[in-house]
Length: 323
Image (cartoon, rainbow, N blue to C red; front, side, top):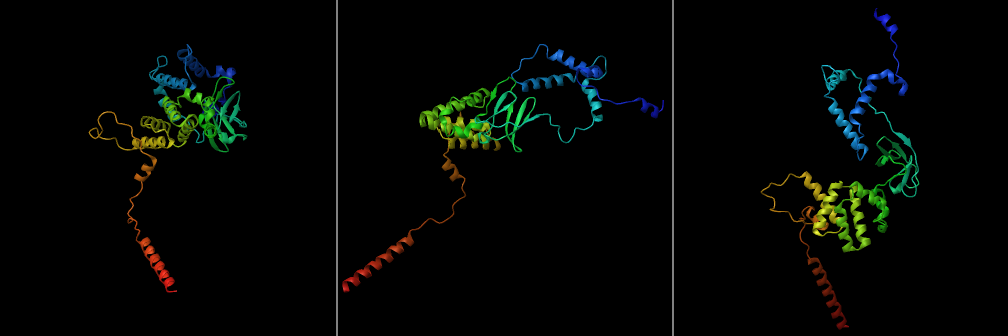
């Protein structure tokens, strides 16, 4: 049969989706069943969808070394032969998320499906654009990303980000200790025992209201500094008894700077555990100013003014006596 006759006998078509077309791609469906029986029986217990995805990726890597039946090559070796024949991926990724446009309520939350998620309180009353994915959702104000949350699976659940409420909490620090956002931050590990220890000490020194406000000012540092550096700054300030946000900011920047500087030689390091020292922000600024080469101030011009005034007073006195 020549090529023209062969072309007349071949007709390309897409497989029918779902169960109706399952028999048309038996190899694919069979491998899905194999994977499910070998890795999802019994059902694995995980704490999050991200953890489950990591396990699936690990099982995929293990499957690369498997041989199907009596074939000479492994799964990975056959794929290495087939990969150069595949078409390249499109330059623009295909958006798989579902778009919603909810309005932010007075609590700084949006309703997506049956669950609520927090957004910055400055967006209260505005409509935002939400792209819902399988494992997470992204919130946009215009074209700017303003929030990102892990997707909630249970119905009627709420996920709050403590950072979204800091502006209102710094004005009303009494609402901070019992807030749901603080409880969720503790559960997620963002609000650490170091935060609690520093907060307790700050309340003893400054009082309940001012100590809590100082902690909220520290949390606001997380918008400009990495979380681990802020925690290091809290620990250093706590050891030195410096219960101010400025001290924590300085220590956090010192922790960030120490990561970029070369490590100190062992023979130059101080023996034993280094003591915690906190430099005041004023001293730190003075240390980083350029040298002042101006001459020292002099009061000579003021002395000249005094002598001139004295001569003027003496002349007026003599003139009065002559009269």
